[in-house]
Each structure stands twice: as C-alpha cells, then as structure tokens.
Length: 373
Figure 1 (cartoon, rainbow, N blue to C red):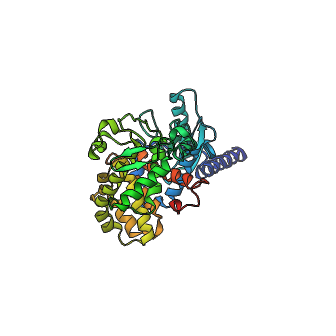
Figure 2: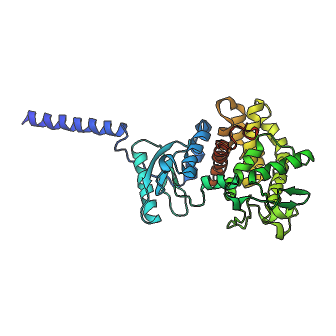
Figure 3: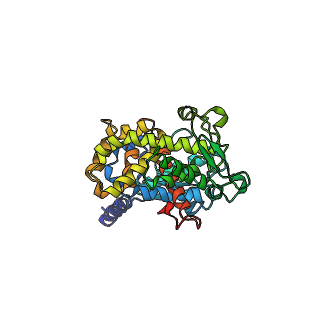
C-alpha cells in the first residue's frame, strides 16, 4: 500500500476543505438564497438600524436630484441597504428588463460576498432588495426648479389677486419666493396660521419637489399646480375650478391644509414625543408635517397611535437619544413599509424636500436670510 500517496490525498483534501471554509467565511463564494418578499427584510430589521438613516438617504437622493456623486452619469442604478448605506451601482442595460436582470445579479453578488445579509429579486412591478434607485429622473431638475422659484426666469414670476390677497403688479411681477413670504406674513398677521419658523422653508422645498415650480403641473392622479393639490383639497379650500392653477390660491390652500394637519397631529404627537428636548421635538414635528402633506394626516396619526403601526414610534420615543429627529421620522415609515399604503415613495418624499430645502438655503439669494436661519 502506497501510504505516501494516500496521505498526500488526505492532506490535499484537508487543504482543499480548509480553503473552502476560508472562502466561505470570507464571504467570497457563499451562495445566499433569495428571500420571497422585500417586506420580510423590513419586518426582520431591528429598530436600531435606523441610526443614521436620515443622512444616508438624503445623501443618495441628493445624488439623484443634483445629478452628482454616483449619479453624475444618468444611465445608472444605485443600490443601498435598509440603513440607506450605498452598496454599489450598475450601468443600465438597453432595456428595462435587461437592467432588472443585472440588478438581480448584482443583488445576489452583494449577498454572496457578505455585503448584505439578505437579497430579494426585483421585477418591473415589485421592489427588490437591496433597494435600487434610478439616477435618471427626468421630472427632477433641481437647478431649473431653483431658478424658477427665485424668479430667475421672468416667465416664472407672478402677480395678481386672490381672496383678500394682492401681490405685485403686471409691470413688476414677483418671484414665487416673494409670493410665499407675502401670503405667510399676511395670514400670520390675520392669526389664520400659526406655524413654526422653519415650516415656510420646508413649504418652499415642497414647491420645488411637487412641481419644480411649474404653474401648470398636472399629475396622473389629477393633482394640480405648484403644490399639486388634489380636487378634494382644492374643494376644501373653496377654490373654484377657474382658479385651480392660481399660484396665490395654491399657496394659501397649502398653508391652510398644513395648519389643519398641525392641529390634528399635535395632541397625538405630544402624547408620544412631548418629552423630547424642545428643538428635537420641533424638528421631528416639522418632518412629520411634511410627511402628512404627502400622505395625509390620518396616516401619520396612525404611525403615532395605532397599536401595530406605532410600535416603531414607541421604541424611538423610549430611546430617542440614540437617534436624530430625521432618523425617527424615517424609522417610523421604514419599519411600516408595505403597511397602510406606505411605500418607498413615502421615504423619498421627506428626503427630497430636505434636499430641496438645503439647496434653496445654499443659494446666494437666501443663504444669509432669516428665512433660512
């Protein structure tokens, strides 16, 4: 019997097994099976994963809206995890089906290499995980929106009357920004609104995100104008169809709705988060008001007091010192994704408004004004 040959085979097998174990533990060839549904990833996520998520998501959305960072090339998709951490990007294929196949292959590769603990195949009508976001967002042109809002384009300036409001003149039209300030100051002096000092700039950010400041913007859901007001909202504000596109009327109605949302949210908010430090409490309340404008005050109230939906809010309220106000606002949404008609768009909206608000207050026109401080 050739003991040397047998021992060599055993040694070789042992070395091969050791190598395989090393590669597996190093995450280089570990085959991770896909999960069936991306919402299962959300349900299994501990609440602590929301630490830092606000800054992470706003960074990714800033790349998209400003065509910067990894979105300097528009024909890309970027991938990120449940904490909003960037994981990688792909170049788009010629067809959407081809891009989806490449995304799924990349998701699998990220899981196999230990970059993520889970992966889910995506499709044309179903989100996958890690989450993917297209850099090409043709409806979002933040630089043009800023110029339109600030009146850099003469065609974007306005003048006129609405209700008891009278703004600028035909010979000297004003910017959307000046119109916003005028309506806010007038209604505040009349004691018809009482909003925090930071809410006006977030409303400006909403104008940029909702419509890019375009007066005749119309959504697939028939939401109209610079603040994308629905027919129901316009009716609640007693705005007749002939004035649906009137920018002063739109601003006035949005302020009225925001004030109404604030009244409805305040009692349940104070019950849940009234013990937070004042500045943090106010910041969180503002972000939830932005969310309420997008999805309705009732949905946000559910996140605060519904037995199931409020579980994340209860956790964050008890451990608020570990999270920023933005993290809490995002965490309340993230851990309920797939419930109560909450989707990734709900996360993106608040992030986009934050990005737009920051961009607006980064302009030379406004960066040193009271509006931004």
